[in-house]
Amino acid sequence: MFLRRWIPLIADASAWVAGLLAVRHFSPVVALFAIVLHGVVGHAHHLYRRRHPIGSFEEVRAVAGTVVTTAALLVVLVVLTRRPVPLDRPVIGGAVALVLMLAARYVWRLRKARRQRPDARVAAPVLLFGAGRAATVLVRSMLHDPDGHYLPVGLLDDDPDKRNLHVHGVPVLGTREDLARALARTGAGTVVLAVANVEADLLRDIRDRALAAGAQFKVVPSVPELMDHPVGVRDIRDVRVTDLLGRHQIDTDLEAIAGYLTGKRVLVTGAGGSIGSELCRQIHRFAPAELMMLDRDESALLAVQLSIDPAARLDDPSVILADLRDAARIRSIFAERRPEVVFHAAALKHLALLQRFPGEALLTNVLGTLNVLSAAAGVERFVNISTDKAANPVSVLGASKRITERLTAEFARRRAGTFLSVRFGNVLGSRGSVFTTFSAQIAAGGPITVTDPEVTRYFMTIQEAVHLVIQAAAIGRDGEALVLEMGKPVRIAEVAAQMAALAPSPVEIRYVGLRPGEKLAEELFGAGEVDRRPIHPLISHVSVPPLPVASLRTLDPAADPAELAARLDALCHDVPAVAA
Image (cartoon, rainbow, N blue to C red):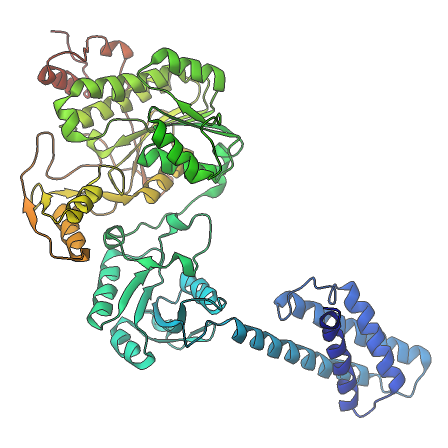
């Protein structure tokens, strides 16, 4: 260890001797002065105190500064001592010495990089499609993992400006058209799509080309999945149906988000659900003063708590077991814990069930939301999670969520804080979504049941949806509903076909017809709503007419289901329902 510490100084001293010898005016006294001065100045620049990694830009800067200062001091010493040495000799000798010092460090860095490379006898050669930022980070991660399973041997990119590019020494071998030839040339057996946000058409095309050439196909996660770390080798995974449906580029204003979450007391209702749990995980990254997770499902609460802190316990005050239907309990929680920001994600969401039991939709979605809104006096920001089914609703689920939007707008008029709703479509991966339904059907051997060959829906992954919800809440204005950009609607039959293609064995797709309350195509905007995006390109702002709380008094959860469904539908419009 002692010798290793002194090797850089010994090497630099030798470089000074060689530099002064090269100018043919070597003097042992001048050389000694140069070595001593270089050591003192280098120590002041932290050059020999292991402050800078060897071969790094920081060390190069320190070496250059040390050599320049040493050469200048040598000139001063020559002048003061009146030695018969031409004044340009220390300067030229210093330049030669600097080149030798940097060359030595470059050789050392190359040697170290070679030691860190994966063993070519064990690691699998891979081609990466994409030569942008994600690929650059990924290649570096692969090349600096001696125990890694992947060795990058080439890159492909459709950008003509990158044709002769080398990324950390790995060459760009062509475009997607050259994929099969590049596989044969390099011997690679795997293609990794190293583009963090990629259009579905491109992903499917690269996958098809890789599989046709007999190679495995893998991807890196999307940007929302990588919020807390840069892409690395461990992030490489098999393709999922969510990838095949496309990804959304999300431009995050971290400063705006941190402004309303960091250091705040934040409450999430429905914290054990798919959306609520992801909200908790992402909010946690912004360091709130307190994150309160409320749900009536104790097992779901434990699961989300452990996903944030594996050492957590259920007696932690961050976990709150409560039912939104209990108005007194909700008021007590708000009075005691005094949340400043509320994300209301608790709701019943299964369309077919709520169509049969509209009283449950009234009790949880409508009256439960009213209980939370009524208790939320003094909050700075209240975010009601809604759905695209609230736009021109034809189902009990859609009607109940439209009513919550209108109730939220009503409380925006009453309260000092900002009360708003966020509306988005189907979330792939959430419990009960078409994705989980199809997955279960495939696991059972099929068939995959699709309602209609032409039915379409809007889709986002949970990470993308929640990412935009948090962003939307930062820019939303009082009483409005924010509609998230969902991309193009996707045919459910296409989702089924993509999932069937990924299945280990052939699976039948069977069409069963639309159910009551289902639309052939969902809508993001209701009648009279205009798509305006004044702040964020992926977030639309629509006004919502308030609904007086008194309008709910005639609703009876025990009423005839058809009659109650009709009254809920009537409350979605400007004229409240009239009592029978």
